[in-house]
Image 1 (cartoon, rainbow, N blue to C red):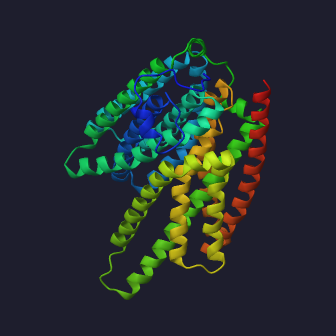
Image 2: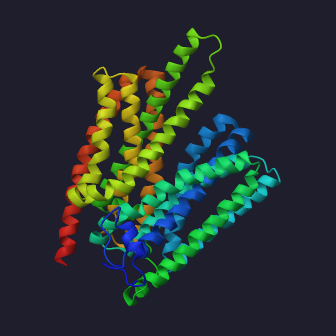
Image 3: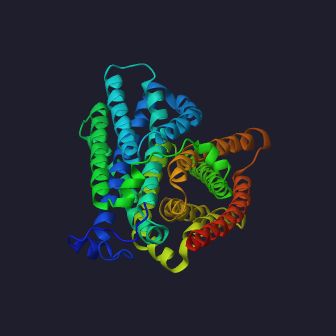
Amino acid sequence: MQQTHETISSGNWPDRLIRIFGDVRPGEGRMVLMMFLNVYFLLMAYYILKTVREPLILATGGAELKSYAAAFQAIVLVAYVPFYGWLAGRLPRQKLLVYVVLGFAVCIVLFAGALSMKVPYIGFAFYVFLGIFSVSMIAQFWSYANELYNRDTGERLFPLIAVGSTAGGPVGAAVAGWLYGSGVSSVTMMHIAASLLLVHLALYALIMHSSSTRTASEQESKPLTNSSGFALVFKSRYLILIAGLLVLLNVVNTTGEYILSRVVLDYAVELAAGQADFDTEAFIGKFYGQFFFWVNVATIVIQALLVSRLVKFFGIAGVLFALPIIALGTYALPLLGASMMVFIATKLAENSTDYSVMNTAKQMLWLQTTPDEKYKAKQAIDTFFVRTGDVIAAALVFVGTQFIGLDLLGFSAVNVAMILIWMVVAHRLLQQYKLQSQASNDH
């Protein structure tokens, strides 16, 4: 569905409001606002469920079961990705969105019922389900956004729409914490999240109605082809590069989270050795609470005020290379003797850049792909390949600690090497993006 400008002409206040944050042209503001709210409510629902997930699996299975569930997600995704592709090949796009959202909402209600009946291992099953829900629903939203806008319009507006996801997560987590503090049960919170998904679905309906043109309606009435998501990835050099980039990104990020946790734990142990009444658990909890708070604040500020300007002045290269450059500093500085506080500050900058700038870049890469690639291949990459990066990072940490004996500087050096490879892949991906842009303009 390719359109440069919205067909909406009623009211100018959305244009004026959103123009503060980026390049919005007359008539585009209302659609951007609806897309913003759509992903905002989706992320709000997810973070409420994510908050429910943690005590649920820890109370019913412990930390060991949680680690098994994280690995099992990748196995389930091998089956889910072809199923999604099969569904997309048989349903028009509008019905696909409706059926998938309603399907996940029904599953959440069923999990709530199972929890109220104290079904065994419900925490494990819900953990696996939520991992699939998060990557699949977010990927589907951006698949639709990539079909809604052409490349030039998407590059201008995606940074603004993505503010909804960066704001929805923290609000959802805060709401969940407030609900738990008010004595609301996990079952009720699941029902609240399912209700938010219905709001998310209603916004889809409004967007489809507002953006519909004759061409768009014809495109949406046609199911996709029968090609599988995995096959689409492996036959396209461009998609292979996207998959490789996201695998490397996740390996670096997950390994970096391990380094950060070790830094904090080692420092807590050092403090505990000198203070008999030192509460290690409380210290770690306080640190991460403050760390996540400032990551969220920085993410929202960067997304709202910086990302659209990066795209405007530097194009997609500006958002594609921002994270690896910052990450390189995060892990190279300790090798040069930087202090713990410098590492924590750069790690905060890395995480907030990942959740804002890089998140926008990942979605913009799909602007000039085919409808099959936007839905099927994107589901494969954003689910299976992203989780594969997590698995590789877990294996790296296991081998590094159990067999090689790497210390924190050793893991930092590994991350530096991975980032250099990541930059090479990003450079080749950018070249391929420009080639596809040129080919698209020629046609």
